[in-house]
Length: 200
Image (cartoon, rainbow, N blue to C red; front, top):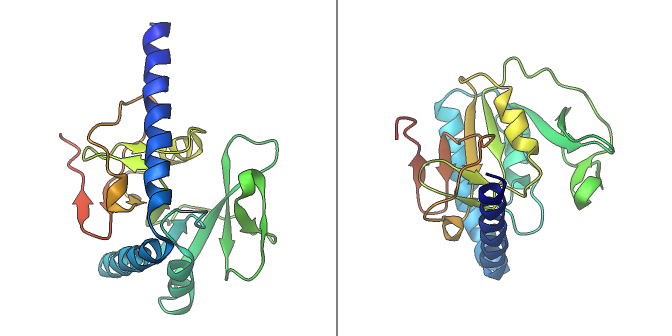
């Protein structure tokens, strides 16, 4: 059993490396244009669903860019926005509500985080916008291997929509599942909406 788990971890780590490399090989201008298409689709989707309270990552390196989305959510739609923070010494995400992106500093793992923190109650949360390294059509998400988001998503009610943002190149044919993996409800790429059927 231990050997099977080790093999699974090796497969996932190799996939993680290859998918990050594919993402980073995309020209910067293409990543930006694709990101804008993705967040426009995301905005329309959330507006149609009547969203008012969103949890969203602050993009890092070659991830789908979210800063323009967060700004539009706050200033155009007047949605409440919460972002994740990985606190020093903690192995879980904590959540802080923000009013803008003007006051950020690099935190753990080099991620940009708000300097001023306003702890947020997530009771009325509508959706979580999730970063990812790779995805498949079953809604399986491959992250960075820390398990922060899986633990967070596990705590949320089914009514909170889990939305992954990705470039089309990040799709994998099959991501081996681990017991703690939390599936996504929807993946948005620059090409399509991929709605996940939980019965599959």
